[in-house]
Length: 271
Image (cartoon, rainbow, N blue to C red; front, side):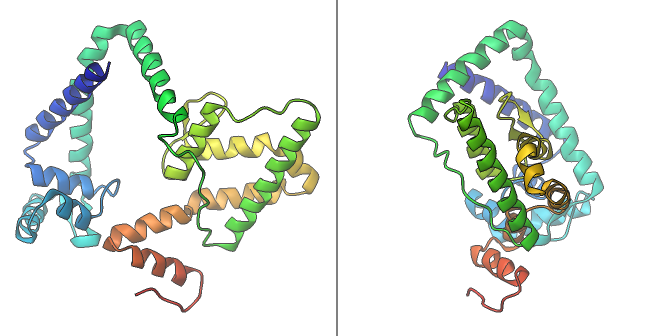
């Protein structure tokens, strides 16, 4: 099973290399255009972890800039519209080239494989290899802290009512994994729907939480305020998104702390 899933992964990787070659991107250019999407490493981390020299990195950025694919430099490195289209085309070709093995497996075979590897994944989770403890976000806005407090109070009340009615149940493995996913990705990526166990947009899962606690929110008179604060939060982004953006700018953790301190209005700085 390990070999089979590894082969599927590597098959997709080979197709990705073919797509990058077809797009006339070298190895360093492929890395830089991926970094410039803002979905992965900071430029400094990508360069140092792959061993590219400053001269090689600068030359590759200059080449991409001349071809109209990149703009800016360092923390401000970004893709132009043409560069964004190029990366989208590479991903589309990669997906197309990766389909044949899955067609060979068919729907039934794919579902069997999904079930087997899911069961194996849960063995890893249950063994404690993945730490599924939840970590609180840093609330940089007072209304975000109020929102978290209101939802926490409503959730406690909702579960207490369920316990009094004999409906309480221990957290399921899906809920544990959902909590781990939330602590890892925040609102920046899909979350797990704790009911279906399937990925959903973060906004959808957040609204499901409000619906789950609606009776308690109504009784406390918090429903309208919670819905408005959640709307603002989803539009603006949370503290985790703010911190990731700050880190992408410089690659320095101290700058993440400094940005958070500045955003909360104090004058204490980290060197």
